[in-house]
Image (cartoon, rainbow, N blue to C red; front, side, top):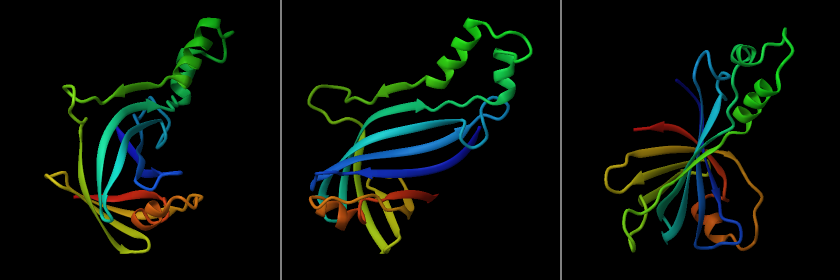
Length: 172
């Protein structure tokens, strides 16, 4: 297995107290999937503002999508030399549109789902350190691209550096 790009997107349109974080990992399996972007794993979490430097994450869903099989596997499923059958074309279409979603639920009523508290520290306008309370590690993020801002996103402007996408550089 090969891991490609890893990044995070903060989505907080029309909210001042939190939003959604999507952790995105592009990956591949050599000889089966396209290089670097063979498939995408997305872990979605809600976040709530605790303080100006702390957020609480509540993981909601894990999904696998955007599966791109390589040309050799496509040729094996539906050879271009022979007339392609309806079934082989249906298999290729199924693979291209396949998406698996697994909810991450709390184990008992009244409890929060898997998640935790994170401390955020800004080194400068382009670099953010995130530390999980309770042993989850330290994450180093660099600014990737700004997203369009809305006036009601004051929390995102200050806490999340203009609701940007972050690229994970290192994980310790």
